[in-house]
Image (tube, rainbow, N blue to C red):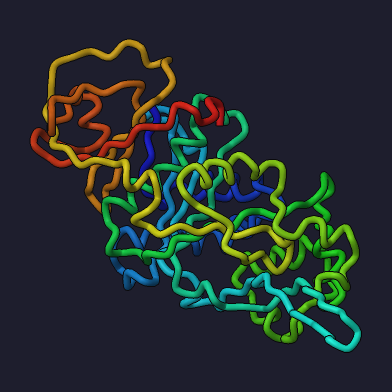
Length: 349
């Protein structure tokens, strides 16, 4: 029975470890202990409601047992681009035609854009390698939908997620080598680190403001525009199963795609149900069965979510054992939210 909860100050060492393990290209988890300490402090303040709702950044951690160490994390940025300018390339076209020569040409282009400013972002999804089993990846990812469904007024109706773009086994991004490197004169890993550290001023200072004509890039760079890193493909598939679709924007460094869905149309948000709690005297013995259900409380600062192989429901009432209720920090009569995991999803992510 896994547990997902808000990150706490005591999780700093685990957060730093996971940021170090995440590797190049996961911009939201840079290998920078000082920065990760600031991220943790901001997340804790967000759950304590010490920040304006639009400035909040929520980070959740997963434990495989109630007393176990954090093995994964995920996050929700309430509004992107409010304290740091948010840059993307917007995919477009330039139409060129000559009636005299009988030529009509559509040329794909990349426009530097801030068009996603103000959207809610799902990010910081990371699960340690030894815990990539028993549907943990699916549970971790979908826990964010339960929080969105419980507190929708805190977020934008526009929800996006940026996918890690393609890079090879050595961390080399063909898109960066074909484009960004010509303007920034630094390695992809260095640029990725700087933007993950919140130092994005250099983007505005050095990036060309005119459109980039895609055919002018080398073939290797063109081929990876909108492609995702192999390790990110399962995460993209899960998002697409929830209704997210590519929205025509890509990352300015590795050309990874952004996906988007209206909050109220996210399948996990729509499928979740609000029930009341009944405490029963029952012993659960088959903890090895893969989880099929997510259950969370609706206590903002003490948000808790658990995964179960099955549930016992009596109309609008959900039956919980005393142990389950204690993990969720609910009492008899308290509201809870439930959501089923889709049976066709991968069983080991």
